[in-house]
Length: 200
Image 1: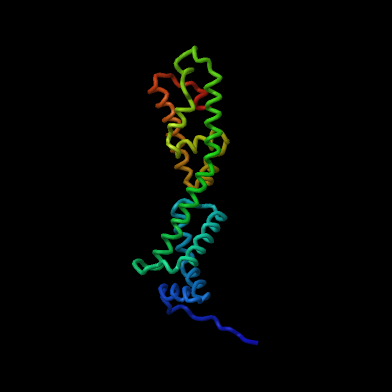
Image 2: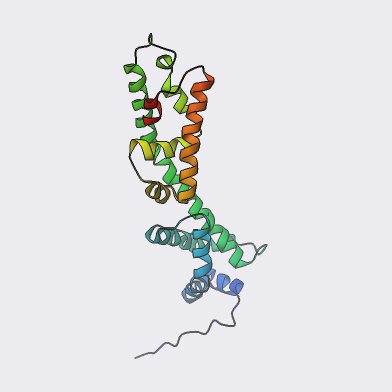
């Protein structure tokens, strides 16, 4: 029976560990991951990811990238800095992908806006002639997606924050701006804001 003693990496630099990993030393990569575990989580938290499971998924993806792309480190920055940037970019990519998954909801929301506009007699007043779909579609996507999730799907501000990976305070701010923007767009076009416009 052969007993393998754990190698003591305390005197090994990050650069040496990275080169050791590239050379096929599995222990070197494990030590690098252990050494920078807290740093990687800090990068994930920094972009607003607070859900533990979501963070773990991002961490695994980032570690896989470090494992596969170690040869891309050119020494112009510290290994820790390079890893931090890689993890942070992975987290940001995750957030952007999650935002894109909301798009079907935006389409559904726009269809709902169309139906509201179609149900209003055009001859009654200026408000009834508004093209609601066009107004909502003219809003910035970050405002529209919050409006979609809170209005169409009925999610709470906390749930929206978790889904988009942003603080609750940001959700509240965007929700308020979305409603205000919609009012301003309609008013600028010469109409009075009907309650159902915001409720839609």
